[in-house]
Length: 188
Image (cartoon, rainbow, N blue to C red; front, side):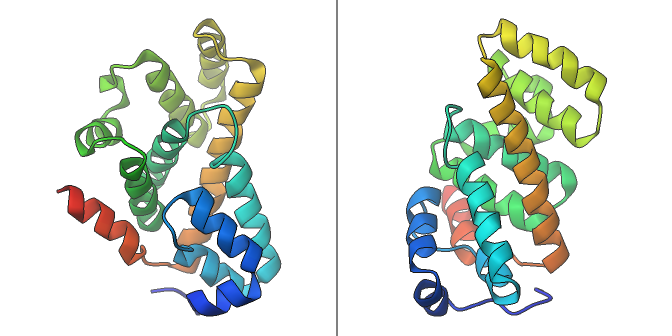
């Protein structure tokens, strides 16, 4: 249960019309998730900066959105954040990944067949565990796989964004949105 109130969708839209539109369009689900409305009720400036971080790291850039959703889902799953795990699992499904592929990724990244995705997920895994010597080795592997320095920095930004949002969701005790749960249930 959330430790703070969750701003209603109508009030969020009236208070932050531009951000409401951006979140609905750029996350691609047509609604503003509870995490942003909960933070907005407690601290509007933090809600705006949190959305901007998600917008720039998850919703924009050169790295495929599906790759970023899988990174986010993997990090949330590893950190035990129920809210972000469900939300980004649902978003990965929404953007075209199958339940079978997501389950494999969450259970054992070494089973990932795509070598690029496997290295990207290892980067997330090692970063979460503060295994920076191994991150440096993966940096070289990413370059060998054709990633530019900008793209590698984008991946690091995505890891940071996911960890930031996981901490917010866990600290606020937010339950996963019904809309995200429905996406997952409709796949099963």
